Length: 196
Image (tube, rainbow, N blue to C red; front, side):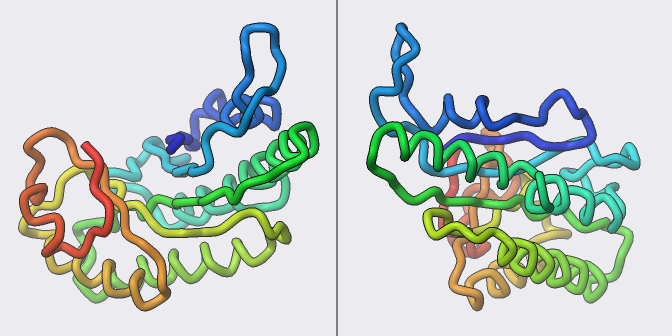
């Protein structure tokens, strides 16, 4: 799985050629020899407002900006799709690309209901935006919880988010830091895949 950081630091944005190096195994001579990565997790840290996607200080406009950056016309997924088509044409065979999109931590100063409402809106917007991508070799397979720990204040929220994701037949991913809060209860929190 490739972690693709996309946020207000424009230097992080990748172009089609960058994605080709992830999708195709390219040897020392520059020849494409095989398929390489097939899973891409899109995430970010620094929001355009200066807030953080991880700590819950990003605004709703920041959330929308992130979706536009990855799923909007000319965005990162369009570049990924173009790269995938190029590699598949060269190799004369293809695989399925799996996408995972981060769920930002909703602001902790909002009520529980407001936080859930914001996450539902974001998931629905992401699914709607993904429908624009007309390519049969790409699948949105799940969402990633951006915060690297789950404290007591977020336990019920994460469980509810897990239910929302699972009701859409998608998977829930998490990458906690070593000894993070909640790591020992990852199954109870509703995560399907946890990576350290």
